[in-house]
Image 1 (tube, helix red, strand yellow):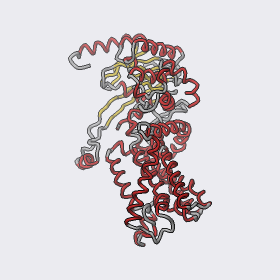
Image 2 (cartoon, chains in turn cyan, purple):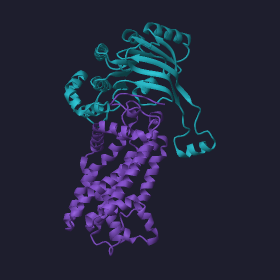
Image 3 (cartoon, rainbow over the protein chains, first blue to last red):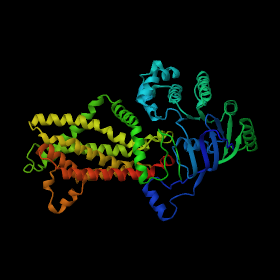
Image 4 (spheres, each protein chain N blue to C red):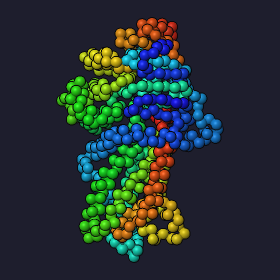
Length: 254
Length: 283
């Protein structure tokens, strides 16, 4: 784990995330369970004792199987969840690109949604107005600005969401598998934008199943498995240990 | 567990929430006030967008309620025709309007966080904004309702005296109390889906034990205490007094009301913040 003196972007110190699944979502189920002493199922660890540090401006890839805890890390960085144990420090304005368009309201137009989504990400109305043309141009949605987004195709949805997020002036960008969607031309455009961010010194954390992307784009990679941090280092090496591990357990669904 | 985030614009989800955290969290709320306006606007615009009559629905509901309740309770049951010195529809509507605001705001706020699951699990922003926006967006309905009230006043030729200037202050008390009550309910609704049904039942009972369709003067003495303890009863009576009777509530009573509402708000806010860390885990 690099512990250099460069300014920190994100710090995880012995972070564990425990989920306690509640038995039953209604009182009728919960109260009897409480009396039987089985109101809470045994805790499930999504992350166990994970420590790493991301320098400011560093590009970090996180790989691992489905359910290994990758997305939990992003949610902890985004501040959506609190760690059960350990400490997390995040220095800078975070823009999550997790499941784009989460803030969109289907009945509102593209224009209304841009303002709504941007203000969720912490932009002021003035900032959005100044960048509105840029946002729509990047998303190539000038013909549909005043159409309710429920009439958008999924590609248009994603383009708009990505465009708002990248124009929110992030210091830390969290990307969860966004490049898997959208057509090739738009993927190219997103990649170019991300490279621009990288050269501008934006810290990027990327969760991906695309080993090629992690190797080409990231300076460092983490391998997460069953909530444990298995490897932390050069993307090429980490990707290799992951592919080996996958081959060893090829019978299991990935 | 201490999470230091030396960054403005972002507030961590604290696993604990204590007295010293109140002011910083209000500061963050103030920073994010634009989000509150956008969310409120979203709620208002999306509410009536899909309907043919559009915003006209805002009038239909209170108007129908007033007509039906007047017919049943005034024409058929002849409630308080000797006690109420003004036309029943006017007497009813002055209290029905703020009651509908309270009831609609509370039930929509209870669902506000569970209804925004996709947002709550992706981006951090102070979650109380969702609750406050749900309450605020009902103010629009209230304002349109005021037009009906104005129409009634013109129709019956009963105009309020200068004491109507108290209305904003009374409304501030009502608003604060409503949000204070809505906050923990919205949070609890994530843990137990029963809460939304419970709120429906409680509101139904609450409507009948609050003097909306009858004057508080008709209540037998031994039940009076029930009405003195009911914040909504006090608020609705205050509206009637300043709008219809033309009497001032008096500073001491107002200050007491503000203190009570503030206490309810701070308590609700505290409970909400204590539960907030678990929201994304629960949805």
